[in-house]
Image 1 (cartoon, one colour):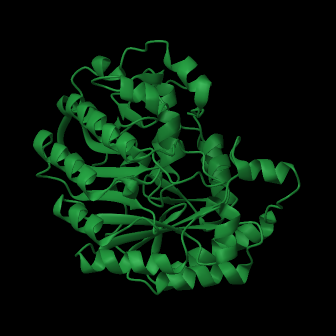
Image 2: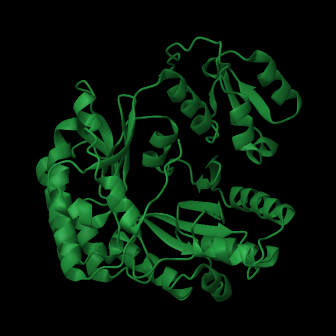
Length: 406
């Protein structure tokens, strides 16, 4: 599924058609996962294509009030939340008082007795001691900090505002507040970045008391400033062979530090995987709150309107700009595509029985079997999307309910 981000007049134009909210057609289904999108940033980074806006404190306060209204409308579609993930944007731009309002709303309207993971993304430049104490007291037990790099030049290329030293400061603030589940994001294949610089980024991340690390290769999304710079010849992407070398270095380096790869780009100490994201990759249901947030329930997939003005003007559930109705073949394709990203792999029967394709990938050293499951090898992870596409069910193969091995 590909969803196109929209902006400005085009957002408002596309927001006008009224799409009945898919939750009303979900036939009593409920979700145990909740994603909340906080759309505020101090400025847009060159590489980012997530929906975000620059807005002052009054707008943010109004947003929190509107968000609480949406959360109240979403509550009947849950049955005891297990994970919450707050992303953005920059969620740490909300001030402590605004966070208190949001956290109180969640505590009053949702069953959080079975909550095992509550993640909030933070930018190193906006994390403060009062904020981490409010988050901790409100039930947040995991922070994800966007470090991206510890080299000033790489941060400048990305147009990240923080200084490398602020990452360590943010980690220390969180630890002192009692938040011990900590994750960092790093980006590799940044123009001008060398193997040595990337190795140093990994080393400096591992010096910190983290239990999770996400390593993403820089991608050039359509419509972003960094893509425009590449097209204009002002930036030169990293050579693909060097990019592969960087990825393999991360896998080897992090495994030696006991952070094992559990998904293409994610590494964790045993038991410290991001449970919320694992649920995504396993195809589980989740609700979405905030502009541009995407949800999935009872086979329905939808995206909230990516327009803060339209969102603030609405009541109840967010206006929906895109909706995909249940489709067994699409759902099966998604389970294969997403499941193969995980090191646990997928059940071979999910692939619609193209046995010759599985065998061919095995012989090529791209797949391996573990019981009834197939998973990517190290070489296979370098071609994950292509392999998944090749294993999609044949058009003439009936799609049935996949087997369960709970």
